[in-house]
Figure 1 (cartoon, rainbow, N blue to C red):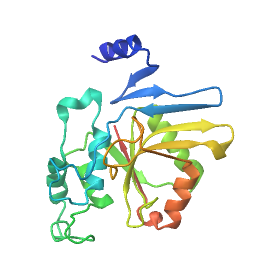
Figure 2: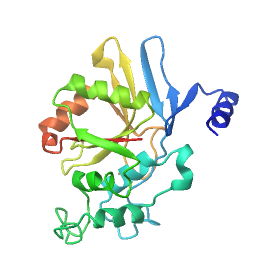
Figure 3: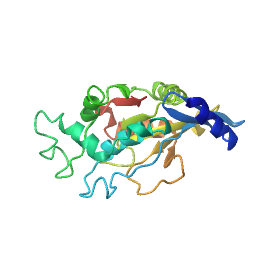
Length: 222
């Protein structure tokens, strides 16, 4: 099946490869090396799956990261993920509104729970690197292996947000480096395969200075 997918991509002229669970696009150029994963955009306020309008950025980030061309038959909707997170509600915090009123938002502990129970074959998690170099190196390794990364991080959103890292570009001049993100708060995809691009040092430092150090987790979805 993977060979058929790869042949199909070559026929339409894409420089891509199939590795693990995601299709990887090579976006290298003479100025720098880069990879971009093909992960479909989903919106956390999808009226079909979230008609009440809960703050489900964590749920939707997990949906984005788990969904790939090779795993369509194992599709999870927001209600599926909500039901899994609810089972982590041992103290009543999730269903009793936890930290965001009635919005039923998730925390990184819910993703930890999901990846050790219902979705234990989908990925792993670990502590967020406490320096930029380690962070960017981890991004490159994960993306090169076809694995998107979910990051609970307050970049751009003061209340916190779950981002999905789907690509990077690595230049000799590190000030030009880029990571590509899916932003599930956006109603529609912004630029096809990604929604936001930012210098990885900016993403790391602004998030860390805004309290991201307390979230301290990276979730690598395989």
